[in-house]
Figure 1 (cartoon, rainbow over the protein chains, first blue to last red):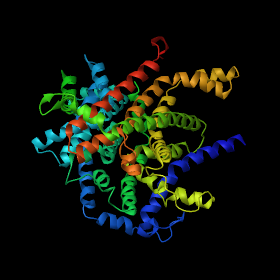
Figure 2 (figure 1 turned 90 degrees about the vertical axis):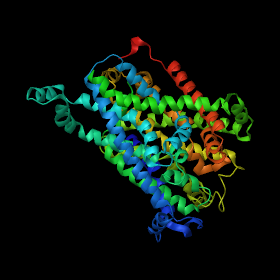
Figure 3 (figure 1 turned 180 degrees about the vertical axis):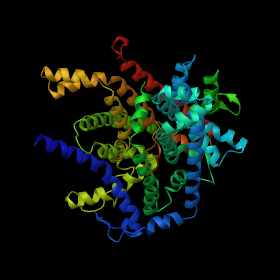
Figure 4 (figure 1 turned 60 degrees about the vertical axis):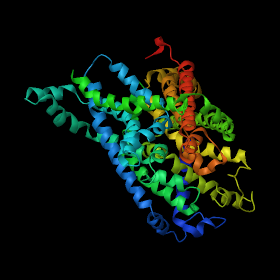
Length: 265
Length: 277
């Protein structure tokens, strides 16, 4: 009896998470007709992907999606390039100021995006970075980098030092040992970091909206057309935003906890 | 020398992208036409929406964050009792973690809009006879509850993930000992699990509260400017009004609130050194 009550609770919370997404999917797939239907059906009637297709065909959406993907890929690249070496240094060396560096990395999370994005508008215009995926991705990297450093340092810590030392004995240089021994072992975790950096960039709204004007990211595009586009278009946009992230969370689910476990310290 | 070379690019990047904007924002906020002044702050506090934005932001944080903590704690405890399917349940519960606040706002717009699914359910239950409006400026309480529910739905996952990783690191012995001495599950929870989890709860609360004060797109999607929030105002001043000074003043306000909240949590939830495992 108690067990049943408990399992009902678990299922209810699963429903609490999933049912709202299902409703958005209904709204996105139902199209213009469903928006004005009341009461709404709880099952997809003549559900079709035409609304989604129409949404993607709207002028600017495909371009915005492309900008978003481009920005997210650049963010991923920068976060790995800058984050992995720093994470490796934290994991393998004890050096003066390593505690301070760790603290500094954690502190960055206390700063609101707004305070970073606003002045960069002016600076980016001067540097020609305004309204480019590269410019937005630089700011997104600042958001994703702390994760990349902390998570990769815990990943590298988990790779036994002896393996690396064995490689040195066999004549590998330090760089080669890190690349050919440590990197392959840490690869699944590094993939998780990459995906997380991608998601951070893909979802970010404020910086994207402030730093672009014609080459909008998808979130920025959606935000600025909110007030003028019909509901079914908005729902389709939301659905397009959500779909990839569900798969991403599935892909990184094993690493979510290592990520936070380490950043607690 | 090697470690410094390895962290130098990262440090340089963060320095350029955090310190410079930080200084610039503060300079923007306190300057008008190149001269130091508080005019931006006067414009900000004289604006019609300023008072509402402050009150609304604090209201949402005060409602949503404690509920998120309680719900996430309950979920983390429930996960411990799960024998099979723990992975799949955990995955489902962490899905909102990957959902942007804009998309989350649209999810709840689909439910709460006049002809949405909430009214459909209420209609079938016989509570309402037709579409009812919940999200207009005439129904501020319903709008507040709607946005709080959406925040609860979206951001409980991050608290959950932090708590679960904390729970995983707890030593089992204390609980087993308490069990031997006949402590009830509730006593074990309040006397053992909760105190041991305090550092984790602190991390979760700091991160969640800072992010909650930044709430913006979720509100924009559900309420538009019927429900002004601080970051939303910063965006409007920057983007619509093109007044970068006032926008920067708002950014400074958010930063001060974030730092203040962080300090409060560090002080209130501090763990004495002798208790650190």
